[in-house]
Image 1 (cartoon, rainbow, N blue to C red):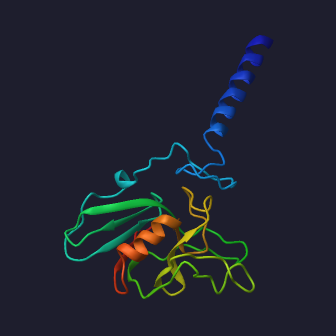
Image 2 (cartoon, helix red, strand yellow; image 1 turned 135 degrees about the vertical axis):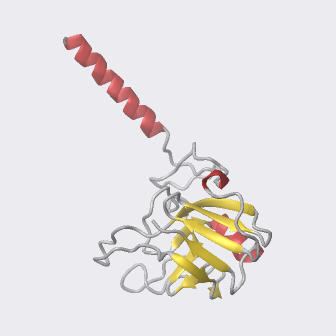
Length: 186
């Protein structure tokens, strides 16, 4: 009986080590960031988490907080690019309230550069980098963040976090002021 328990303990430790080894300090593009979140075996192509087409008519960015993904759809309704997205948290302790990204249909109302910064976070003075910010609803924006801050979870203060390269592509190759943004419900 003791050998069975010992064997089960070894199995449990091996399983835990395997699970931990799937997370490392390397981003999916091979760059090191030293953070605690990474998904080396995450799919490089997130398109399978989105509809391949939407009704044609206008360019559209879809954010799905449940699937942790964004997608860019061209005027013909075809999905042309997608990626990992981190939306707002169920609870923000520093604010004492939920921080969900608002769901609904919005329009990009302002665009920023690589030097875009938060006027609010971190509390109390702001200054957090938000490269290539694309504001679509009040203080909520899609923007780039440092590697390790885009995770398969919803942990932001309400903005939609993207990999910097994805935010830069959206900002300069896809969206304009007025581009439609649809945030699906949680």
